[in-house]
Amino acid sequence: MVELDLLPSFIKICGITSVQDATYAVDAGASAIGLVFAKSPRKIDATTGQEISSYAKDKILRVGVFKDQSDSEILSFVNQVELDCVQLHTALSVELAFELRKLGVAIIKAMSIGTEEIEDFDEHRVDAVLIDGPAPGSGEDHSWADVQQNHFQRPMIAAGGLNSSNILRIVSSTSAWGVDVSSGCESAPGKKDQLKVQEFVSKANKAFVQPEDVSD
Image (cartoon, rainbow, N blue to C red; front, side, top):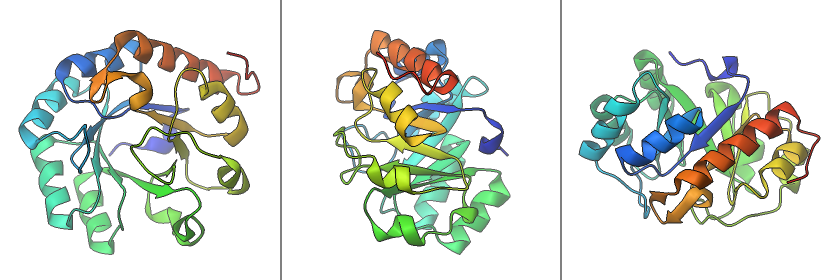
C-alpha cells in the first residue's frame, strides 16, 4: 500500500486525459497524476484510464478522482484502472474504506473550504485531506484563512486556483504538505501545457524546501 505520510511533500497534476499529458507530469517530477472519473470537462472513461495507468505504473502515483458515485462504481474503476489512490469528493462509507484498505489503495478525502465537514470529519480514517474551494474543479482562487486556522493531523493538500504565480504564497501561508493543480497547468480544459507543468512543479518544489520565500 502507498504510504502517503512517508512522502516529504506531494505535487499532483490533476485532470490528466492522455498518455502525452501524463508524460509531462512524469518528466517534470510530479508526485502524482489525477484521473477524473466524475462529471467534469476532464472526465475520462475506464479505457482511457487504463491506457494512462499502464504508462504511469511505477513512474508516478495514479489517483482516481470521484464524486457522487456509488461504492461499487468506485471499486470497479479501482480494479479496472489499477489505481494507487482514490480522491473522494463525496462521503466515505465505512464499507468503502474497508474495501480500499483490503486492496492497498490510499484514500484522500476532499473537502470544500468553509463547510461543516471540515470541522466534523474524522481524518484518521484517511491518508490525507485535500482542501478545495467552494466550487471544486472551477480553477478559481479562494481565501485560505480557514485552512490557516485548521490544524490537520493527516497530511493536508491545498487545491483550488493554484498556479505557478501563487504556489509559493499558498504553501507558505497554509503549511500545506501537498498541492493539487489542474487548470493552472493547461492550455485548454483537459489539455496540459508542458511548460506550465514544468514551471509549476519547479516552483512547488521550491516552496516546500523554502516555504518562507514567497517571492515569484
